[in-house]
Structures are given as structure tokens and as C-alpha cells.
Amino acid sequence: MTNFATFSDACYGFAFTPFGKCGMAKSEQGIFSLTFPSDEESVRVELQRKFPNVKFYRNDDEMEKMVYFIFQKNEYPALALYGTNFQLSVWEALQKIPFGSTVSYEDVAKSMGFPKAVRAVAHAVACNPVAFLVPCHRVVRKNGGLGGFRWGMERKISMLKWEKENLHL
Image 1 (cartoon, rainbow, N blue to C red):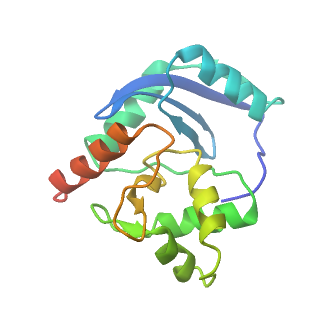
Image 2 (image 1 turned 180 degrees about the vertical axis):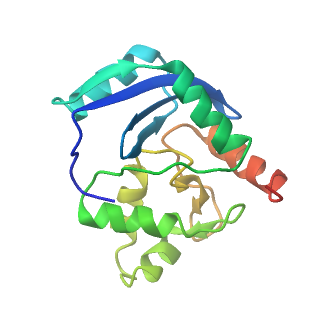
Image 3 (image 1 turned 180 degrees about the horizontal axis):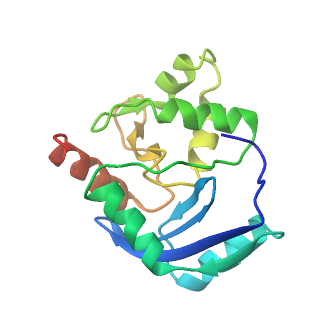
């Protein structure tokens, strides 16, 4: 993981997941964006805003192949995450949460050695650029409440349920 983009071109596209249509982008280094947008144009605009020096080309077939490997074969591609050092540390901690499990924001902060940084952890979780692959949906409130989710509570519930049903993968 790195905190800055080092690529000049990347592909993006759309595919259907068990949780609805996703927009995904990847470079030679790996996937750096997985979202659940309300429309396709917003994905292109957001990618160009975040990475103004990158030439993007659309390739839905490549994204469908990625989704197949992720959700059918349980094979996770390389990630190319970009953020602050703290965000990268939080996203790394999230990747250690076992499939089908949940932890609290406080648990994540403690696991990182920053027990009082719960709000900062929550903010980093909310900024996760690769939904599902960095499993921010596995983080819940200390009291067991689901908390928020950038892509909607129905989708978070669906992801958690899907993981429980597919623990054998």
C-alpha cells in the first residue's frame, strides 16, 4: 500500500455483484476503487477528480472478470490503496477482520495501538475507497448497532448476511 498514485493509465468499468452494480477501477498495481454508485457517469467524474493525471479507459469485461474471481472463486486481487498513512493503517487493520465477523470501531482503534482514536478510525473507515475488499462493512458500533455505511444500510446488512452464508468459501 502506498499513499500516492504512481500510475499514468487505468481501466474502470461496471459489473454486478451479489450487492448490486459496482464501479471498479484498477491499474497495473491493483484495484484502487470499488464503489456502488447511483449512476455510471458519477464514477468516471469522481475518478478523474481524484486522479487528474491518469488516463482512464473503460473495460467492463475486465471488471466482470474481477467480480467473478472475488465473489465466485474467493480470490482477492491486489489492491493499490491511496490515502494518508493513518488511513492506510486503518484499512490494513480492517483486512485482518475475519470473513463473516464484526468488530467495533473501538476494537479497531485498540488493535492499532490508538485506543482513544475511535473517531479518527471511524473517519478512515468511512473514506475506504474499495468497498467490500477492505471490509469496512464488518465494523459496527460498540453497542452492537450497525452504525452507518456509505453505500446504504441495506447493502451493509446484505454484505454481512452474504458473508455468514458463505463462510465455507
